[in-house]
Image (cartoon, rainbow, N blue to C red):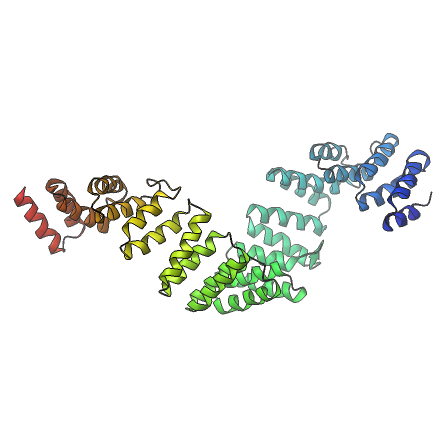
Length: 419
């Protein structure tokens, strides 16, 4: 049976005829034909057929490492990790395929979060094949996944001594990512440049731009993010970071326009609306800021930061009913975010809802008893409400916090005399 002929049928899409020939090989083909066809079928993704051929061969050669490895890989592709592991454990330490089996087992253990066992398997393989850079690469991948960036860098650099790419993955990119994640931004930028010289790839370009932003090189970040935007305007992650870079350079209009462009691409990203709202406030565009912040809260009613910034704007505008509406329409627990209690207290006070204001001040006091501004608000409210003893207690705390403040001292003395 000509295996090349079956391969040609598969390449031409003649699946029915190819499968008819597969059945003949399975029934009467030689062992060599069965193995060669198993390799080809695996390559084309005919996994059940591959498995049938290998299981027949293993009846005659139950300890053959090459067969066991291919069957394990087939089970992995079929999604049965447990079967794959059982098959790999049958590959004996004396088999030439044993190091490769250890690598596959390491992958499986890593996929299941058993990082220590994965590392043991890789180090065991490394002892058997000390000069095999694929093992160094696998160690680098494991260490990087664990956040062990110094060890990842050491492993990747061993690979880089022999090659710049493994399985289509750039070693310069991996080193750039590891240095960047470890906080060594200058070294990372050097490797990003080398990776981009090898191949212009959008994730690498994003990593370069983001690392430049972290390193405080805002103009470089802007240049690279803009380059990325031109290549792929649907790369959603770039807009928020590009806006940050513009803001750092005091280019607020550009930052705001970037956010608006980002929202067109990613209309359900609450962070874009929130950050756009903050930039709009810096530009004194209060109406636009309010609209953007409300959009952020519509997407996520539990978005604490959005509610706080919106309330700050509404309090400044003395729109106290709107503040209370924002608080009542959020999914935020006031005692988990006590600033909302303070906001509610101020708003209720101005709306002459005094019992509600008192309740909110009392609840907020637990969280803000060391906050001078809060104590001042609370103290003056208590005075207005005629609660002299409670007000004097609060003013006593304020005088201790700020003994040079004559207003607090005089007010406390007056209250003490009255009481």
